[in-house]
Image (cartoon, rainbow, N blue to C red; front, top):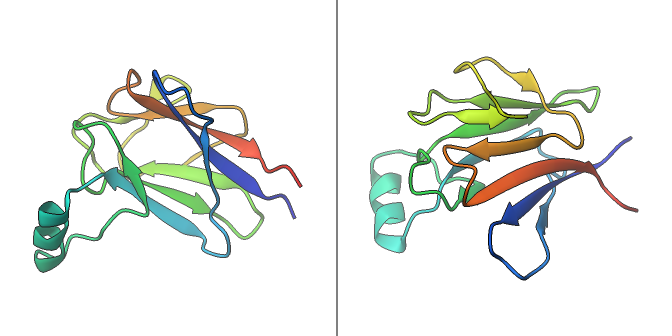
Length: 123
């Protein structure tokens, strides 16, 4: 079974890229990072908190999903965000899962602040 890392690269950061794994879950929600007061308000409104916080202020609270199917393939699905999800520089159509292959970069709303890359996990 192939295990993948989702690597976050932040523009201007001197630190190493942050690695994230889906683990046993088959999906993860990506959305704008919320301050504590915003997070409390979102919970009261029934808006789910993101599993992976996005730094871009143009990203949506519930921006996209990363999905893994039973064969291990990874897919990315935009949830109808206003400013888009870009896989390999191409804007995804809302609500249509698209395969995310290792080595391909993804950005959410704005590529200047941060981007993500899917990589095969090192053992």
